[in-house]
Length: 151
Image 1: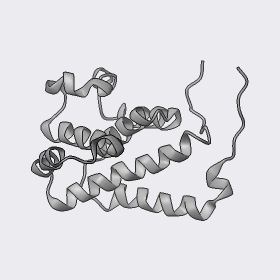
Image 2 (image 1 turned 90 degrees about the vertical axis):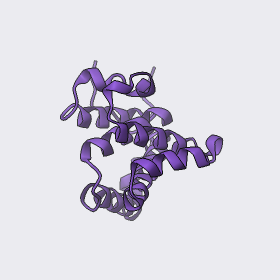
Image 3 (image 1 turned 60 degrees about the vertical axis):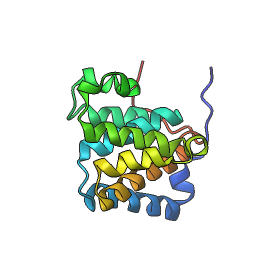
């Protein structure tokens, strides 16, 4: 199968890229959310959206702080509750709820569960994390951003 060359979105629209990277900078420097939790949410959202570039990138980020045994089970986190702390499970559930918002409509039950695990600012920041990764995925998938993984 030949490689389909697509636009490099951040080169074509550098001001748009700068704006998105500004939100990413806020996420990683202006919130109280643990970096491991942020990368966990980035990975789960990217798995749902099927963004190979972001899955590759955030798996590598997570492996710096999380054992591989946990990272490989992120897609089935709900089936292995003992592996992830309560707050991480709440973040993963909220990430799925918000990423699939056209199906879930961010249900009252899911909101209540997320609110129980996070204070108001942390919940808003977590939702910004989720929204931002969804935005990056919506650029990574259509423009086929490359992965570092090699055969």
